[in-house]
Image 1: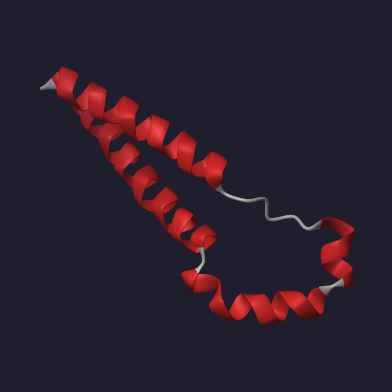
Image 2 (image 1 turned 180 degrees about the vertical axis):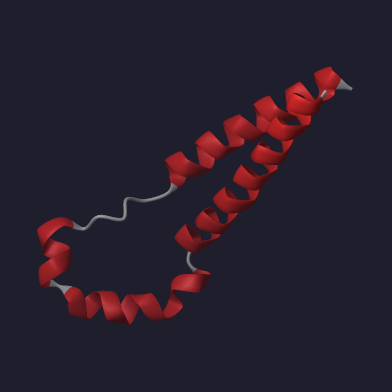
Length: 75
């Protein structure tokens, strides 16, 4: 049982690393401050974008990782 949870945690950790690396950067720099009009147009479909799905997956996989860590601490 212990070894199965350890393997799941390692796979979950690698999955979190992969998801975070696939996300795009949030800082647009000076060009983002100047060109704010395009941002309001693109933010309408933000919930359907790949970045939103990756952010949601990061939250869920991170929560699973924390739960697995607590389970390993109890075993």
